[in-house]
Image (cartoon, rainbow, N blue to C red):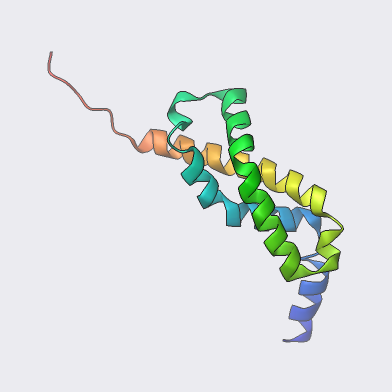
Length: 111
């Protein structure tokens, strides 16, 4: 590994915000699979709470995997990573839900 790559790995990846984003991107697909069937019926705070509840196990699993990869520096920030990843996953899933709602073309029916 080159010196700039090593320095980037040592300093940039230990930031809890970046680690939270990494966990969120790894978790987004699995969380979407868990909640997509209900997203068309939920709005606002109810949707956020549903996503948060269904995403917790996935985010914890991905956080544990990331900590095992990154080591003790990441372990110190576990709670913040979980919190940041949770908020990011909620935002990503809500965005995906909006996209999927827009992509559904309304069917015209004859009168």
